[in-house]
Amino acid sequence: MIWYPYEQMKTMKSPYKIVNAEGVYLYTEDQKLIDSVSSWWSVIHGYKHPELNQAIETQLKKFAHVMLGGLTHEPAEKLSEKLQSWLPEDLDYCFFSDSGSVAVEVALKIALQYYMNREEIQRTMVLALEHAYHGDTFKTMEVGDDEDYHFVLKAYGKSKNVVHIPTEIDALEQAFAEYHDRLNCFIVEPLLQGAGGMRMYDISFLKRARELCDQYDVLLEVATGFGRTGNRFVADLVLPDILVLGKALTGGYIGHAVTVANRKVYEGFYDNNPSHALMHGPTFMGNALACSVALKSIEIFESQDYMAKIHRIEEITRREMEGFSDPRIKEIRIMGACVCIEVYDSNTIKEYQQFAYKRGVFSRPFLNYLYAMVPYVIEEDELVKVLQTMKEWFSEKC
Image (tube, rainbow, N blue to C red):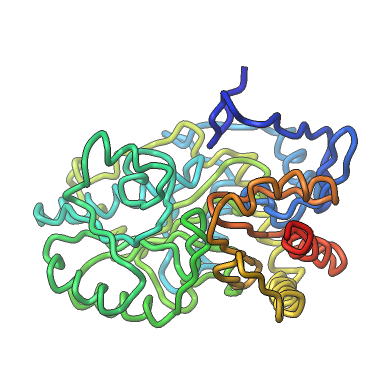
């Protein structure tokens, strides 16, 4: 029996069984659905993309996987080289892993050990944001602030090693003034907080964070990427010390992620002392199939001007949502290729998924949030259908 994620198994509705997928569409036995959430925001090129399929098929004829312990291979080397040239400035040092949660764990581990290697043993604390989501593993839950994981607080109490603040510059400055000599890093989802409620904030907050991290010698960690905010990477605007990429790295084909460090961080581990090495090694890090498809995914993103596609998605979304309101809606937020309708009462959108299904849209609202993060290859009429379905829910459920 499958134990499904984020569900109370006793009361959950039967999931929709997918028999095929192509482009932006999911197919069940009786319905054709636009995937409005891109399989948790990862399938940016759509399904069954011929070039991505071919990249995997070509590598599969050679080998599917070898470990990176004592071995290496061309797909991992080429992906590392591509990321080095593609990412801003000296974000050059790539540590691969098999999921975004693990990649964040690696980033947190790097930040802590960086200071332990320097004998700054008091730097055990992490600064993070309220409403943050960084993954499902224990340390990522600790630095996150997702209410689904508040059972951890019940079990262990509030962590003495994590400080959560709102996205307000006054709170940021106060936290650095109080904790700066004990912090090893400040970890953020830049501009757009995803699973914590699709919350959006201004770039000025991150710019001030960078200044304070420089002032107090604290590492800035960013989990982001691939255009969803309307920027290629927010790291192009505010440079972090450590960058985490997951989800869209392989275009949703295979679970894979990367933690990328700058030269300063890398050199904190690079010496003759074996105890200063980064002691981490996921079995499937640098998987050859994943690296091959990730490399092709980046090539497509570049060659087909995906940033123009993303800006067009935002333009259409703003046009379609302009003037739309309902007394049950608290706020409508739009950034890049993301739109979120936050309602006052979660019961307002309780039956939306089935409503959308009948109209040819797959959606997965959570808590008080009805949102869309569509594949970047979506056509205008398909995007309009997704947005119209969201609006029709409120007009038909008066």
